[in-house]
Amino acid sequence: MKSTHLSLIAGAAALAAITGFASLTAPQGPATTEAKAAASLPVERSSLVCPAPSTSDLAETRYTSFTPPGKDTGQGAEGEKGTAELKPALPVLDEDEPETDPKKAEKAEAAAKKAKEKADKPVLAVKEPGKPVTAEADGSAAPALVGTATGTLAPGWAAQQTTTVTAGGARGLLGVSCTAPDTDFWFPGVSTARSRQDYVHLTNPDDGAAVADIELFGPKGPVTSEVGDGITVPGRSSVALLLSTLTDEAVNDLTAHITTRSGRIGAVVLTADDGSGTDWLTAAADPAGTLVMPGIPADATSVQLVAYAPGESDADVKVQLMGKNTTFAPAGNDTLHIKSGMTATVDLKDITRGEPGSLRLTPVEKSRATPIVAALRVVRGTGEKQEYAYIPATGPVGARSTVTDNRAKGSTLSLAAPGADAEVKVTTSAGSEGGEAAVETYTVKAGTTMAVAPKPPAGLKGTYALTVETVSGGPVHASRALVLPEDGIQMFTVQTLPDDGGTVLVPSARQDLSVLDD
Image (cartoon, rainbow, N blue to C red; front, side, top):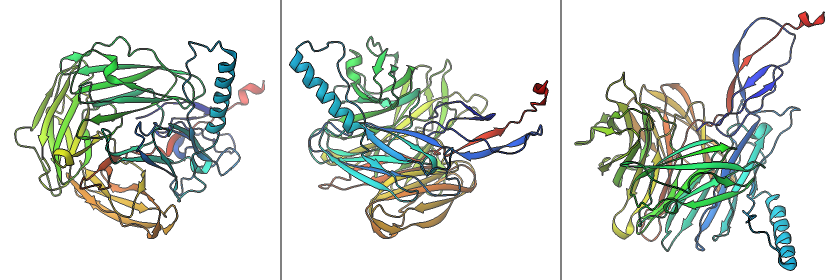
């Protein structure tokens, strides 16, 4: 997803980065009328939001935050080091019914003041590029987080929350990379079925209120909803809405489209399926004719594709699996027809057949590349031992991408090259409590998926971050799977790694002002 923010500083225009928004300082020097090529400069300000982790009292959550080091480290207007802090969101108060009892009003005011003081204290703050920081929270009271990084800590700033719930209806491993605020989100794969509890979490990082709309689209088209419009998200606050309360229709597979009328928000969906587990569904990549969903585990027992065509034209796409050695079409599901405005699903079953893979969707006719959005629901295990996670379509790694909260065991990095051969550099950071960073280089063959277990940093203590950079060749799409077994259940979660937007292209603009001397 991309958020847009336009800043004019000394004649230089900056486009917003994926991590939030960017402000840049124009290079100094004598005025000239000569046009110069655009420069790639580091962002100086980034925003992230994290949803409230869980409603279960058994939840155990670990937060991690990290800024990768490198030559593109940003500097503030005066060269300051900068900050990168995540703080608790403010509680949402019911302002429609003000308290009239003086004593109760006084208590409410004191509680609000206490909440404000708590929200001013960071849950975790990065001190220096290259070293992760962690924090922990237990139970259902852990709040949503909002934060900003500036100066040297802004480019590539990443954060994650990982929650383990070992029992109950919400049993599972829930992982989500904290997201940049935006104005437009697509979620293929949500549900209002009675067996599901899907909550959309909307988090506002700014001081002013934001107003959002939620549209739902099922296999037969738009789903009627009278309460999905005009949802107010107060400043620096987060709200969670149960999708099944937005409509009377119980539909297994839906696509949710969330937009804002004013302000910007972070949006993610917490899904829970009776008997199957729970996880976060993050927004899919913007509508496009070709999509990639990287990192289907080798031992997946079920893979379901959910896709939606938001335009006025139907879409016909080829369905292909980029496996370990080649690309092939699954038998009986080599193409998919997606009607305009309707959600389509296809059960790909155990498509990987014991080897890791990534799914690629391309137009049947190259001249008719109808934009679509898509996501995968991936199941591991069977019966009471099953667990699921989502892999939304994602953009390529690009220049750089980072995922945090990797443990000594349990992390798998998947790299898919849908076009040409590609070379990538993978850096394992120093540990949050000790250890030395290490670098490995991998070559991914065109049309294949490479799954690697990253080598933990030497002397690792705590957790570490993984940073992936494209060195040469074609685009690479990546994801990280984290597996934490519990009572015979391979509990897992998958996070995609799109470009972190740590730099932006800034055109050099010079103007001859001598004409103003008169």
